[in-house]
Length: 137
Length: 353
Ligand SMILES: Nc1nc2c(ncn2[C@@H]2O[C@H](COP(=O)(O)OP(=O)(O)OP(=O)(O)O)[C@@H](O)[C@H]2O)c(=O)[nH]1
Ligand SMILES: [Mg+2]
Image (cartoon, rainbow over all chains, first blue to last red; front, side, top):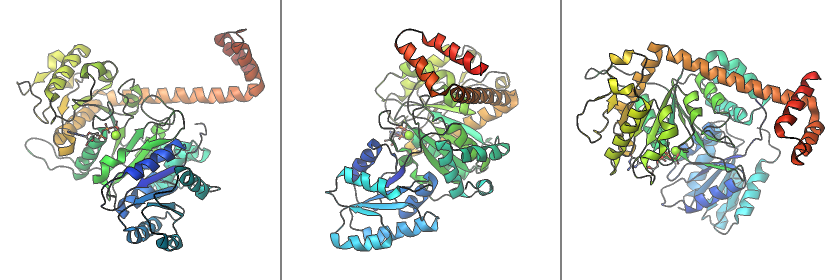
């Protein structure tokens, strides 16, 4: 067995009941094109499903796409379940439609970054990379 | 850092971390695998391959559900104890960026929340045979962790997938009507590796034709099949969930296994019990005929050889150093020496050192 390059593994998930995952797919593809391995789980993931997938897939980063406005309910739940699974070092990013005034609260909870609809994929990739820089799993 | 006792004790986090290290080929993973190896050899390894979009992930989802549920004895069919299930799903890495989108979990959401199921997505990382280089070791870790059944979904390549036949005890080749290409076209590489042929999406038009085409190619590929194959249904449509061509149990006691053709509709969970019965029969056949031990030995021989090759190559590189390799490459590039002679001379030189 020879040492191969380790890859950044990212879970992109779409929690909540709102209908489409176009944005999440765009992000998933951008992260793939940046050389990451993206586990894509599709629509209507519960926080439990997201934490379980993060555990089994041993990802370093989880990205949530939330358009429903339910972020202030979903994010703390996902964070609590990640911690309950011993995944304290997993970085959580949130994208979608998030009002500016909610961003400080989300960051205070432990969210590593928040991206609105206008964010460039380049910024997102850079933020994801920076969040795990210097981390040895 | 890698907690082998925790992995053996069923700690899912420890297992997940070990799998990452295995994928990255670290020395820690190598040491852990050596410790885990005596605990392997218990699980039934089931490969699931076939063209893109034929429904492999959907079938894996349904198979896992049925395996988890088990079955009470009914109508002459034996009971099946509920089994724990691990899934390894491989998707291709981009050859250009090395990145990958691993999307097989989308179809496996019914398995969420079950502590006796563990799903792991893997990128192929440049490997071409439908599996990743590390898939075999990932399977070993899951085996040692105590999963009864391990379902291995390959990249949907539809050709040259000998790797899965070697890695699994029982290989399912999943076909479906309406994939755009002629069912006939896939036969060459895939048919030989199939222990069980699945015609999924039997709710769609063309399913009966697909079954007929498969049976025709099967007759060609397995001349022995004609003696034992029976059409239990007697008509031409793919009776849902029926085993269309399978050896008589008595005749099947011989050395031949004739791949049965099973029609399924994964999205409506039809045909799954029949498919699991075929898988059970295949496992029983492997055991009864000694084929299990033979396949195991062949797989291990192959693994030993490829590891030996890696070891030798690493040792050779080490001894020669980058300068000697580079000089040889320059000569080959300048057409002063052919690659074969250059390799022979380098090997001879390294072995003398
Ligand atoms: N009509 C019908 N559609 C099905 C059936 N099984 C799966 N599908 C659909 O076929 C599509 C592909 O299914 P998957 O399970 O993702 O197929 P796959 O072979 O794993 O695909 P890849 O991993 O991309 O190669 C999905 O849209 C499924 O819903 C079936 O029995 N009937
Ligand atoms: Mg799939």
